[in-house]
Length: 479
View 1 (cartoon, helix red, strand yellow):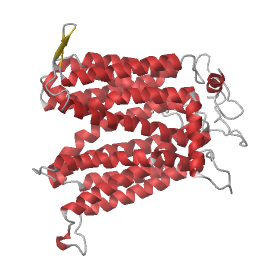
View 2 (tube, one colour):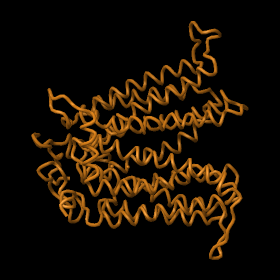
View 3 (cartoon, one colour):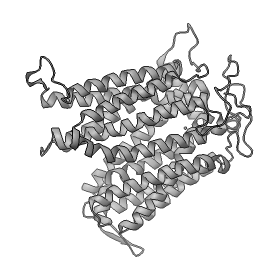
């Protein structure tokens, strides 16, 4: 959450200016990004299918009718979150040292192999030297958790590498469009994965979905092999010995001194402190406050996803005209206002319509975030900066989910109050707090990002400073 007018990638100290792979504008920006986007799209669909299949496999298969099934499903979520918190920041150090394209290729190979091993555990083939050909239940659950941890740990290296590679392949004035295409792919995957995984599991078991996930990494690998990218930036010179803590400290100091990055961090944390609560309690809001069935809960998610797809496609073109910083700050503010309205609804139809608009605004924020990160960050720091921002948002979301669950089931259990003629219960009170946090995050961004312009925007920079820092960011830092 991520130009120069002569279409050149900003050079680092000691580097010659690097020409992008193509200056010709196309439906997917240029050939390099088109290949990257194709691999990313297939891979992200596989990821959502994979994640949902694991939950369904445990809930309806391994733990069917067992009292420990909810805790086992929560174990999958915990296994996903641990690498983000423990490995993410350090992974960014190595991403900045290594070639980005090659890093992504290695991670794809490793992840395909790890998921392939889980296919064997799922019962696709009888295991030799194992009684009955299958692992005991406890070992199977352990294999699932280990796979999730390893796949997500390797993803901590692949994600920042993707951001850095986009910076190398796409000129700044086209990055909002590239970010929009990525968000459209993710939104589509968000609809396909949770929707297709349960019926696929019931029809054929987990094996085929797991195979698709493994194959998706190989498709991404093939696309990456076909990309011709400029030489990647390296934070450590050839022959120089790196120092992880020193490099991590340098990245953190740069992050803390950047007004744009710190503003993004504060806004993301404020929004995700409420966003996690929405994810955790929306099913209860749908059934209790909207007086709807579980089917309507699925429609709420689908409406949000459709809005996100439309918003990604529309705002990828409009964002450079409106201004990336303005789209992010106003979009965040509007998200907060929409959540406040959503918390007051009592019927399904307006909630479905509102979440469609919510999806559009959320897409705008995501479209704008990537280009802002790349604008504010020298090439040799992109890995570390991405590895700070992503864990911050993820940890804020996890904290929000945990806190929302505790509040709803303990302190606010049975809570009812009336204020200014409005009735408040447990879930809508928590949602109201989430909306206020997002409004605060948007207002903060409006103030802090005022005057920030990217290349291609009116009043935007046309060059970078001598240290590779964008002119707009350098000017802000000097104030």
